[in-house]
Length: 459
Image (tube, rainbow, N blue to C red):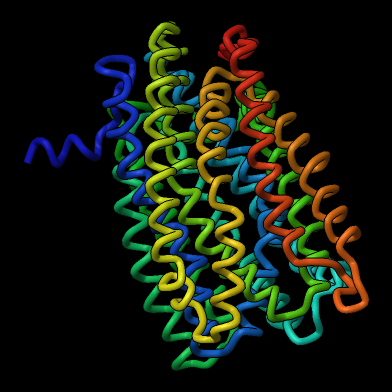
């Protein structure tokens, strides 16, 4: 009973064997990330089977715009996560308490702002991106509902990030699994029974994420032994708000840059028609699972590095970075191989259309090596962020997306145009992504070895 209770407690990653601490922290977070990916995946499966391929394309086309609208919370979450891990590692209760309280209040203010403004921007943005007439109404419905329920989405990501910063990745996992089960049942109910269409899957996601965020908040309110959470802590301070902005702004900008590039590429994707849009959606859903180990190990190394920087144990940071990256590489290679072997079975979950399955599998083969490269990028970027250097990963993202991916995508499209293919070959979409991933791994490794991040122990 004691061991089960311990799973729900904060974990000190400044002691013990580095790779064991990283792996034990990563496993529940990896399961949680897979569960979170199920939100979008179940949405796609349900609309693909109950509504059709056009609805599948609508949900997928909405994703880059949704990510763009959430950049505020990406920044807050990144900044707070780094501060929490470093203050927890330093055993500084007062600063930890004010950081958590300030983040909760700032998230509330940003959520209200987005709920008021974003729904009015959805339709104009979709029209600007030349979204096909057959799917634009579905995209509009999906995004508008998601924006009205943005608070639940924002709070889950930020509150679960706080828990992970203190080494508790298990609680967030349990709450997310509960919400995922709710989301699956509501998806089927709203779409198959109530026949709400694409808007039904958005409503299901909003309700489920609201529940998961409420559970995280209850958990934090009960952690009185670790930090304080009262009116005094909830009042934002200039110091802590400034630190959140300083550390989180580069991560928010990184997400904005990435999302902007995705939107620009989505505009190119839309020009290939609904069939290839739907195939790209299927690939991106499977892609989400292939990326999970990379994101999980990257986040684990951010927490691990933050705690050890806070405790001034920089020798453990170097050891953990090496061991964590090697384990992530092995994990990513294994999962990529599984996807290549059983890819067609995975694609058939989303559609029964043979041409879509063939096209999706073809794209996945192009992308395969890139997932292994991304393990390097995510892990080394995670170490740099944990040390307080959130600027370098931002510049790497800028180079790989704006200077590499977008020009390569449009360049291949232009160079392969023929009378039969007036927009060029569709390989420009996955091909540009693969090239940007490989370049990102090389650039990130260069900056990591250069070592400027060691001088930026932020707090």
